Length: 290
Ligand SMILES: Nc1ncnc2c1ncn2[C@@H]1O[C@H](COP(=O)(O)OP(=O)(O)O)[C@@H](O)[C@H]1O
Ligand SMILES: Cc1ncc(COP(=O)(O)O)c(N)n1
Image 1 (tube, rainbow, N blue to C red):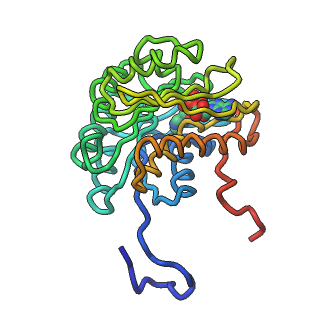
Image 2 (cartoon, protein in one colour):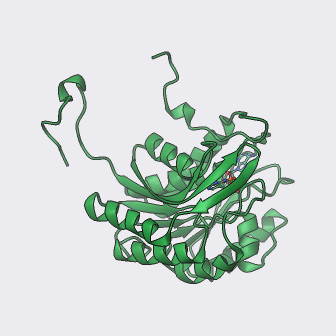
C-alpha cells in the first residue's frame, strides 16, 4: 500500500512508502536487550519486516540471569493483539515468554479472533519459552497444560528446545538419534509442523535441528560454534522464521532460512557484561561511522 504525501518525503529520496510485511511478537521484554521482544524486533527489522509487539511480561534481566518479572494483565495482552491486528493487520505472528496460564488462554483466544493460526490467514509460530538459558523460570509450572491444550493445536510451527521437549512430553533427548522420538511426541500435541532445536546437545560437534510435519523428517545441519554467547538464539531463530512466513515463504523454506540466520547470528555473537552475551544481527546492518 502506498502512502503518498507524508511529511518529510522529500528528505527520503528513493523511499517507496510501501508497507512491508507485518509480523507480531507476543513476548516478554529483556532489560539486557539480548532476548525476548528485543531480539524479535531486531530480527524482524533485519529480515525486512515491520515488527509489532504484544508485551506479556517485563523481566528484570542482565547477562547473569533473570532477577524477577512482572506479568502484564491477560486482558491487556489480548487488547494489544486486538488493537494492532484490527488496525494494522498481520502477516505472521510468534509467541515467546507467556508467563502464565491466564495469558496463554487470552493469547489463544485473541489470536483465533485475529485470524492467526495453522488454519487461518496468518501463520503462527509458537516458541514454548519455559526458562531462560540460565535456568530461571519464565513460565509458571501450572501453565504447561494451557500451552499443550490451547496453543499447540493452533500452531503452524512449534520450536521447542530440548528442556522444553522434556517438560512438555517427558522425552529426554541425550543424543542426535533421539530427536525423531522428540519430534513425534511434540507433533502428537497438535501443531502442524514441529522443529526440535539441538543447541543443548553440547556433546554433539554439530547443531543438527530436526523438522517434522507428521510424515517427513527434514534435517537442518549446522556447525556448532565454540561460544557461550548464545543468549536470544531461540527467539532470533523463531523471529527469522516468522519474518520469512510473513513474506510468503513455505514453512520448509522459512525454517531453512531461520537456521541459516541463527547460524550467522551465533557466529557474530559478542560478550556483554559479566555473563552471557547475545547472538547478533549486526552483520545485516551497517556499522560504518554515521
Ligand atoms: N553454539 C552454537 N553454534 C551454532 N548453533 C547453535 C549453537 N547453540 C545453539 N545453536 C542453534 O541455535 C538455535 C537455537 O537453539 P537452542 O539453543 O537449542 O534453543 P534455545 O535458544 O531456545 O534454547 C538452533 O538452531 C541451534 O541449533
Ligand atoms: C523475556 C525473555 N524471553 C525469552 C528468553 C529466553 O532466552 P534465552 O534462552 O536466550 O535466555 C529470555 N531470557 N527472556
